[in-house]
Length: 110
Length: 116
Image (cartoon, rainbow over all chains, first blue to last red; front, side, top):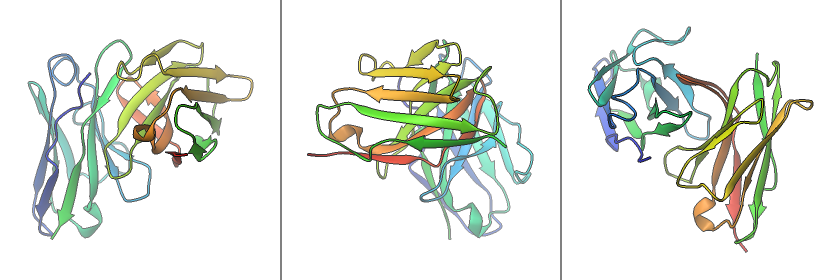
């Protein structure tokens, strides 16, 4: 069960869009539509931003969207705002009631 | 509103056992899976394992053999035991409500430091 692969960091200016990738395998990301994304600010618990690849919980702005192609899932944040600066983690169901997280991506809003 | 709260010693000696408990309030522990997830300082999240309210468990293979989880439905609590700890087990430990497709409720996290 290897961690999903995410870029260590991404950055963008306010108003721009950024995309964070999350690459796994056919046994996790590619095999199930149970990919979720979490936002974590320093010293805080993660917060659910996207689930089922592309669904947003109530209260999450529609600037956040998700997609998947093959073994790679992606989180896109459009109209970047200062408060979006945080760490982002993907997570995928990996079968047999096990889950795997990505290594995390630090988003910097320039 | 479901709330989770971790509790347990913040300092554990090397080779000893780390024991944490998660108390669930605002909802029943029954029906759902419950996970432990940890985060070493400055690093990413790692899923440790989960337990169903019936007691069925599943653990991350990387930690198998050292992890035991249990549940006490009468107290609405579930627990984690990690044996033979080393400095590499120093982390913030989160308890969380696990669904197949998401984690919807998290505890605030508790820092467990392994040091003599």
